[in-house]
Image (cartoon, rainbow, N blue to C red):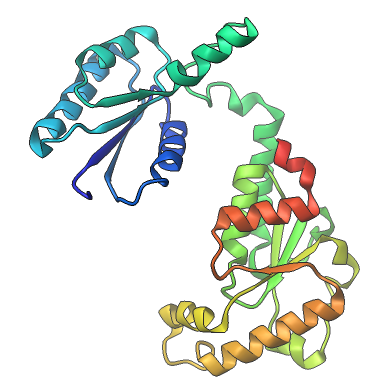
Length: 273
């Protein structure tokens, strides 16, 4: 069913429509073509969106799925009246029943980022992103005490993407620090981390998978060899056990699963943000 098309239509960025729609689509074993139509905020743009959706309907001979987070009533009515796709309007599905249940009208605010730049949460998130970038791969020891979490593990075990996800999605100041052969020879954590054990969380990975990932960058090197990957992973896990560091394997887990586990362990209150 890869010839099916899914549209995500929004008068904002379309991120909410895409995130929610993809969560629903993950329940089905097929890979549709994705089309995001952001900033549909005028009648003219609405009519253009309808024409694009209907053209796909005619071309493919199948109704596209259309996830909408359109707030403007006029814009939504144009899409609803003209669209021949299967329209799944999230505000009508969820916001309207909640309005009825709690007796409060929603803001019907166009775009979820309209006033984000003025909020403290947004400011904290930008700071966290800058912090995580500055403390990627152990490149800076400065201000490590300010970190909410410091991810440790061998190179290419998933530390960088996890740190950035924590910063972007949760405003977490996440540093990451690689464990390298020199650390294993000394048999102890890097000196910069010794006094910060309460902030450390370890990531490990299956050696076979690690070898595959490293080979994509440095094929044929000792760094990417399976033997070396087995040694590094075993030594890193032994070091984390000795130091009493909580850790998990990233081999079969998504970044979202890894980040959620870290938050549950170290900052459970941030799951409610």
